[in-house]
Length: 314
Image (tube, rainbow, N blue to C red; front, side, top):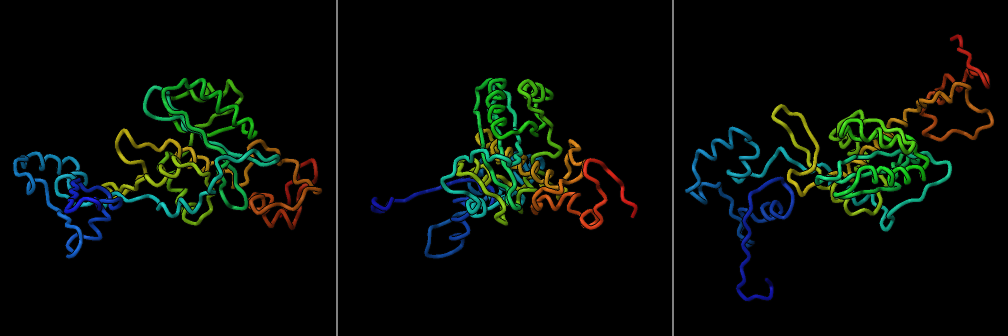
């Protein structure tokens, strides 16, 4: 446009969330002299042939959406979940994947898909190091695909990280559990819906306690998440509506973060701790000190005898 004398660029759109090019143009220039002209007007002012009945029915059905569509008002019930600046600050530039480290304990989350729709099947593997959640590997298979083949591919990756139990989205009933079982991987449905998983990651991202891979789709999906406020005041977090928007990759990452948080409680389900701590073992890390063994009562009174369990008399 800068090379065309007297050129004029006209942009027309219904407002949506308070972000993006349209919002920035409105915020910078609306009602201000000396800059580009920003016109804001409801539908029937711009096009009186639109029946008022159409507007009224839309307002009754979904006031928030209709106010944006027909009244040209930016929505206040839809906000960005996390800023791009916060996400980009967590990226290890140039790191596409991290190899398995001997002795490291990894967690994984899978977001299954049937292979015939529009959703991808994704997997994220990561670990915790000194309170920072580190993403080590991420996989995405876009449709069409055979779910059984993808489960085989994912299982090979999981075994390279010595992961034998994964958590996954509650999708398609029992088939993920059965398919992963064939490859020696135990599949457990996630305890929380993905909206709650996202909420739990916000503080980690904003505080820089996440170490992300340089994965453009993961970054785009995290930055594209929206926080919506329902009429009752309840917040929900999801991707933008529409068939071209997805969150399969970032859902796997959020689920992996949640699994690491659960493990951080220090509870070991296989009861390998019954014999007590090894007196020759090195000093525990900060994460290990959060477990039952790090409690001052156990450290001071030492009620356990190697190879057996003795209940202390407080």
